[in-house]
Image (cartoon, rainbow, N blue to C red):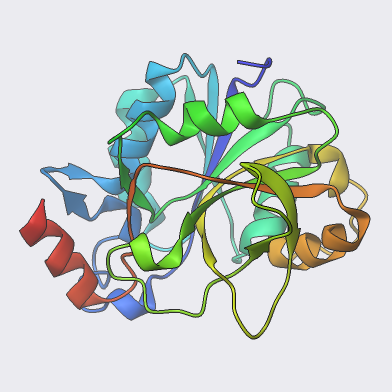
Length: 236
């Protein structure tokens, strides 16, 4: 496990593109196959013996806190009075001492992403691919293989190796970022801003060649709009 046994799940967003479903229900609590998205994620982490899982909340926070009560004390909830975005949320959890070891890499998951273990567990795979020379490792998926995804992609790989430096290409990006990653906390601990996106960090690290990606082979589902959610539930 490379000593990686702590994780953070981002669950503070409003999920506006999923209205009206998210008017009274946080997006991570939407159900797929009879279980909420975030419960699927936490259960996957627990199967891999994670010792500490931090979840940031804001929108309809009381509902998320109530749903996560059953996972205490392993799951800890951190409330954000104002949404800090992904980078700010992670930095806030570090500063407030929610992690047991601030120096070890952390698995970080967007609270609205869903996958099925068709080959193996993506969390297990990303940990196996992690190396100490990395600052960030992203789990990628070929964009044409993700059900519901219609975007232009996020990255392309510099080489065809399983793990490779990432390059930004605005014309054609073959791969979509799944929302699963490993982060070395040291890269944001010196940040002066309190609210910022991790994407700002990604593109700085591309030039340093310390951000990497591996292509996951499991089934991923893109749930951005109401029709995506209906379609995934119908198929599964």
